[in-house]
Length: 562
Ligand SMILES: CC(=O)N[C@H]1[C@@H](OP(=O)(O)O)O[C@H](CO)[C@@H](O)[C@@H]1O
Ligand SMILES: [Mg+2]
Image (cartoon, rainbow, N blue to C red; front, side, top):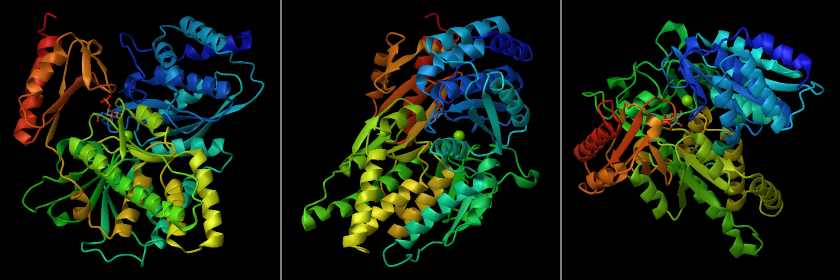
């Protein structure tokens, strides 16, 4: 590292002292904490993003958000050149950087890292980092801290994109690295035109629906509601009413609203109620990367029927499978369909067991990864078409470059020899899905449009969709413990290997319940151990979760001696 670089880093880092007595970790989805202690972390992640940009000679993204957390929290995560999450082999460096105690140690760590990675910090080539934030009030000053970090690396230039959803930022990083234009309008244009394409390809036109054709969306009082208001002005054939759009000071971000609240509490969000019985409703989370649907079944209760990420995944899987099977019919016609698409489904242990059974019974290949989109995404990318979802509504469909090229060629051939045929339409639909659904990361806005297009295609109401299978009753609990890292898991988090004996004790509880399934794991975003239980009745799921939560407390709680 040259002297100019060293002194630049020393002087800027002295303006961002780290918080005392706090250990920060990159976690499941970047750093998250109370916004008041994040200045130094965000500044340092700015440095990391700049180093990553120099190292990859590509555009990198920085998103300032704490997603579904309370409004006083904030956070930061890095988007890699592909638009996906930061490469996991850089996470340990992110942790050490965030926890460096003073400017000297910080500069020493950076010098050591750039030498190991052979990153040339001479500023010879300029690199760009796209920075965006959600609607949290703390975002503005944190963006400034990020910019200070970025400009502390010679040659790195920050480009402030203002307020965006997390998936928009990821989408823009990906697009920029492909040499495309990136703005709100470019993103909305791609979504609305591919949506239109799918609707135009519906056999026999749009089916009349037996329910109100309106969709009502809860925007979590966050950025998603705001962006959806813009997007819907560009859509034809879809009526969307947005509530909790965060405008006019109506409500607080994520407070009694949003996908996380709706999924965990299973009650209507604020400003929804008896007037919505039977209507198709959806909820976004605070940074609009999660999506769940729900139905208000009765006027007399605030309980909802949740149509979660697993059901969205199932809907997508049915549609894709149908298009693939239409496309492969060609084999019989002219024998020259030279490629069998590998379709894969990726879930986590939190997926409802009934969804997994359903998907397997459709003949689909289902695999499991640990929690966190970074894991699911990586696995889904191994297939020609990989569909991944977390039960909480975060997911997308990935198309491999190889398969897309094949599909494009196929579509061209079909448009010459069989224009307007079923096969041709199926190929066009698959291409439209690949344009509509965000290829960088799970995206609630593009997810809404794909769900809506598929429901129209099928002629299904939300009730019909919800009846694909019936969820097994489940319960999720959190337990505060002394040290959550004491729990180490394997087999996609379904088996706790430490502390010794805890898995055996969990198994002994689980076998008492018909269709019982239960696992524990340390959260990557909160200081808790999560307990998930499933069983044939709600009482049984509650009771299993409660007994295992007690076990966790006995083994690891504040009163434990182990
Ligand atoms: C059970 C659960 O919902 N876990 C969430 C939560 O992770 P934890 O590591 O469980 O805290 O936040 C992640 C980031 O948003 C999300 O990817 C994940 O699904
Ligand atoms: Mg989110």
